[in-house]
Image (cartoon, rainbow, N blue to C red; front, top):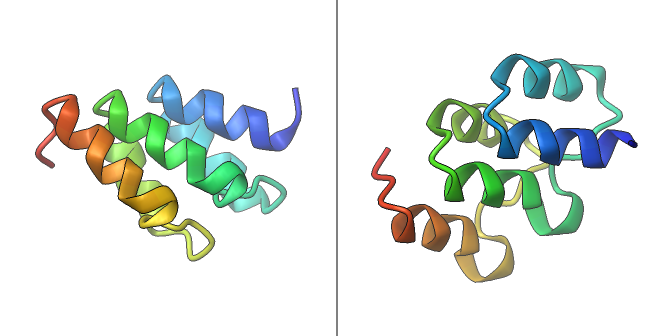
Length: 79
């Protein structure tokens, strides 16, 4: 598993401290695959992970036609 995949997996599963560690390490790119880590965390309702990812300047919250916001809304997340 590489850093990009690890970040996405951690975000999708709501592992906030793992996401934090990977972002601090600097090798994991939160913008990889049009910010898939953000989209997945939003879809699964992991608000704390979403918030953490949004603090990273590399992440693109509007990537892929605002898909992260759309996924969050479709899953009922309001945070």
